[in-house]
Length: 389
Length: 130
Image (cartoon, each protein chain N blue to C red):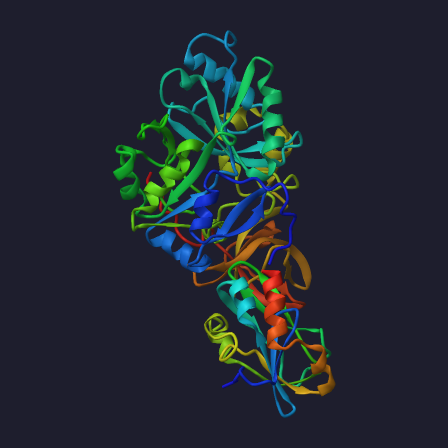
């Protein structure tokens, strides 16, 4: 039903597979992406929570920064430390302390200390690649992110983008481990946020992280494009795996209390009000050397004016993004993501409210179609995370 | 049960159907609309006795994905609302053109029906939209 400009949409390497599987394709961040397959959003969502779902996330922006040949310090540890030091000028997390083979969720900051994107940073596990800095940024803002990161990395560092030549896919759900172990022996031993290359058939190998964005255990797998369809087909041969569209990806991440950039996070919000101050490790708070440190540290000290919260409508009507939140006759916040949670079996939402109203259980009202509907602030996530730590 | 094989069923460009029996018009959303929406999780119905002009927002239907307005296809007063949809919104997917009806409207002006599409015209309209 969405009207959009269908011209110049990019296709991922799995486009033909989606079409063959009966996907309904919609424009998303400049790509023609599957929003759902024949089973529909609700069934796909529930399948992922019970079994394993395969997601095409090739629109996202995985990339590596590395020193150009002949540039940078000697030794992989020194090279990584220098790249981390530069990245930390726009990212408030401790990157330098990342061990080889680990990734971390973080945010990219604007000069004012608001959120330019949420992203993953990682340090490759083996060999000379240990000197690289791996990142995964969001589809909608990847050009701006790469420009911002490249600027602080400097002239002696190059960016290798994998979104042009490789396909990022995610396998999520309680059966993901057993399925992927059958194809890539060794992945079962990985822990949440581990990151490692694995050989696969005739390909140049695949890069696996034990991560995802559904709240379930699972993996994200980067496969070179010429082997991407074959790898996806290999996964789909397993009866425990079904293809899952962006519709269920959205309801899964909302139930898991995970933020969607451009909706729950944007350049108007800082990490403290977004409930993401945990990405700023103690060492970084002490050094106070990231953009907007003054504002962010003050918000940490005094508490922010608004906070991101979960919201449970008490009636059946979902409250969508943009719904105004009221308490005591005045507007106290706004919904930034909202819909129906198939596993919760009811409407759920996330949004920002005045900090004094952010405690779970606080009654609020949601203005849906001109009518005030009762709701309450709810703890996040709505569905417990199922990560293998 | 509404029988849509009768000649008295009309369709709108907003994908509502209207079946007329005497001065009562039963209104719902078409199978095409229900399939486009996906899993329906909530239906908001108007109160009995409320009057609408043709084209007014009359009800709302929400799927996992999105909320959509349902417009009054004709002018009139709500005579009955399908309260079964409140507890079983999935009926809209299962039987959009039968048990999934939304409301019955007391027709104010039967001449308005001539502005709506018949089944053949509507099917062609959908084929064009798909």
